[in-house]
Amino acid sequence: MSMLEAHDLPTTAGAEDALDVLVIGAGQAGLAIAYHLRRAALRFLVVDAATELGAAWRDRWDSLTLFTPARYDGLPGRPFPAPADTYPTKDQVADYLQAYAAAYELPVLLGTRVTALRRDGDRFVAQTTQGLLRARQVVVATGPFQAPVVPAVGAGLDGSVTQLHSAAYRNPGEIPAGPVLVVGAGNTGRQIALELAATHDVTLAVGSRSVQLPQRVLGRDLFRWLTMLGVITRTGSSPLARRMRARGDLVIGTPDKNLLAAGVDLRPRVTVATGDTLTFAGHTSLRPATVIWATGFRLDHSWIEVPGVVVDGRVVHERGRTRLPGLSFLGLPWQHTRGSALLGFVRDDAAWLAEQILADSRGVEQA
Image 1 (cartoon, rainbow, N blue to C red):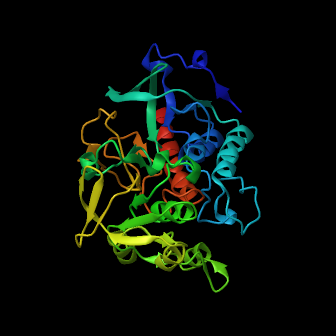
Image 2: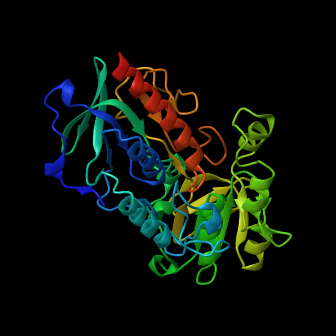
Image 3: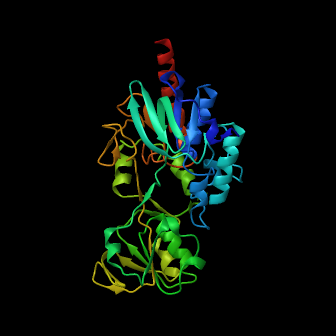
C-alpha cells in the first residue's frame, strides 16, 4: 500500500504544486472514491486523522457485526472476502479496508487531521497537523459518526452514576455491577441492551417508535428484499424515501419481543435527571449504576471555513456536490439514497462523483 509518512507530504509552496484532488477521510467512502481517482490517473491524496486504516470500525463495541451480509459489503472492484450470507465483524471490516487500500496502492496519509479548509483563489488550502495542502478539488468523506451526542439532561446526574456514550462501550465486562440504563432505542441501543441483559439488570429508554424489521424474511436476508425492491437505491426525494426519513432509522433484528424475552425493561423517554435518579415520561423513575447514552452522533464540519457550504449544521449540496465548484461530499446519510452512508452501497455515489470530478479536471486542463 502507498502508506505515506509525514515527510512524504506533497510540496505546497505554490498553486502550481496543487493536488488534483484531496480526499479527507480514509473510511469506506474515502477509499471508494480513491479507487476511481487512481483509475483516472489523477494526482490525489487521502488523509485521515486516525493512525491506522479501519480505526473507526475497530473502536466500536467488541461484538458488533454488520446488518448487511458480506455479499453487499464490498467496495468497487473487490468483493468482501467472506461467505456471501455471513455477517462480517467490525474487525473483519477494518481488515478489509486495510487490504483494499493495499491492493490498489492508494496514497493514504494517516495521523493527519485537517483543522481548517479554506478557499484561496481557484484552489483549496487545507491546514493539517502535518502542514498545508493545496488542491484543485476536495472530497470530504469523514463519515456520519463524528461527534457523539449526549442529551443535556445527563448534566443533572451526579458522580455516583457512571455515564458513557455508546461510542465508548466495548463489552459487558467493563460495565460496573448494578442496574444499567441504556438511553436510545435505535439499532445500537437495542444491541447493547440485549448483550448487557445477560449480566446486568437492564432498562432501555425508548424515545420514539421506529419501524422494526426482522433480519431475515422468508428465509432470505432483509437487505436481499430491500435491494430487490429498490428500497436501498430509491432517491432521497422520492415519496417512499421521505416517508422512511420521517419515521426514523430502521430497527433491524432486535425487536421489542427479543428484548422483553431477555429481561430488558422498556420505558418511555427520559425527561429529568437529578442526582442519582432519572425520571421517564409517565413519571416512573430509576436509580441506575450506569447510564449508556446510545443517542447517536452529529456531523461536525466546523473546520470548513467556506461560507455557504454548511448552514445550521447541514451540508448544502446536490448529490454531494456543493454550490462551490470543486468541493464535494461523500458518505453523508441520505446523500442520494438510503445506502449512501453504508459500506458496500456507497460505491454508487463514489462512481458518479468520480465522473463529475474527472470531467471538472479535464475542463481545467483544456482551459
